[in-house]
Amino acid sequence: MDSPTRPLPPLATLRPFEAAARLESFTRAAAELHLTQAAISRQIRLLEEDLGVTLFERRHRRVFLTREGREFGRTVSQALESIASDAQALRGEGGDTQAVLFCQLCEAFYWLMPRLDDFNRRHPELDIKLATSTRPITEFGEPFDVALQTSGRPCGTHQLALTAADEIFPVCSPAYLEGPAGSLRLDDLPGHRLLHYRVEPADWLEWPDWLRAVGRGDLVLGEGVDFDSYPLLLQAAVAGQGIALGWRRTTQHLIDRGELVRPVAESLPQRDAIAIYTRRGRRGVPRPRRCWRGWTNGWRTTGSSRRRFHLRRALSGSKTGSERA
Image: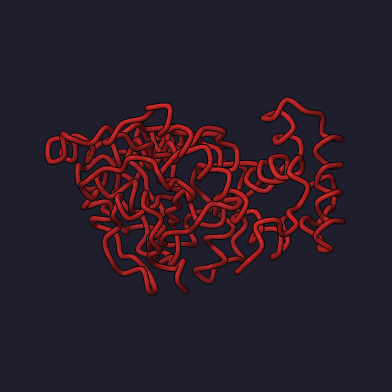
């Protein structure tokens, strides 16, 4: 039998480490815990010395989790959230039907909202709390049960449940094109006003990336118009201000309604475009009795995750999809 007194890491180091691992930032961890950045760094150094491994790579004023750091971060996060969840249940807080969904603003606006009313009619017993942001989940400081964001964005120690495929292609308004869909060639694009979505860090596919991927990285583009909000960029495209890159998941209904068209025939399929994460360590939290069926309606899931995503499964901590791989 394992000894109940086996040595633990210094307990004071675990909360600073969990926050820094989840947020992938000492600065944001310090702000969340109301400590100084130096205090966070000191506690993590103590933890690394105790474990005998490097948990973070420090470079260029940024930190990156090592493989050991990511794995241990998930373990610590699950343990702390289990303690918090059981304490919440003992206090009588929370409800059987409540779940928090974190979603990128663009997907929330263009993909989720048109489907949410139908979902609520089919599952009136579920109380869905929607949280949106243009920033990655590592910068979202509140608890959530399920999160959706573009693959490749920082995810900290959150568990990947599954990925889904998508397709990227240029879109513009019919009035801007002044011709039938598909009437432009790639060589024509430099002569048009292109709409760019600029984000820091650069974790979003932009026009030069797309052109290289379709074999025309030689094209020289003009400056175009920059946006720091993708929903605003799409609205600019609808208003006839230029040509934008569109993701099928967010633009198809605008194309179906005739508000956007595809000016060129080329498109770029992406196998793992969207990532869905769950937050672990929620043992003891009352869970919805129904599954959120239809979560990936219209999407092609990839790899071993070709199955429907169930909200109840996410909340109960069972593994699906690419997490098993």
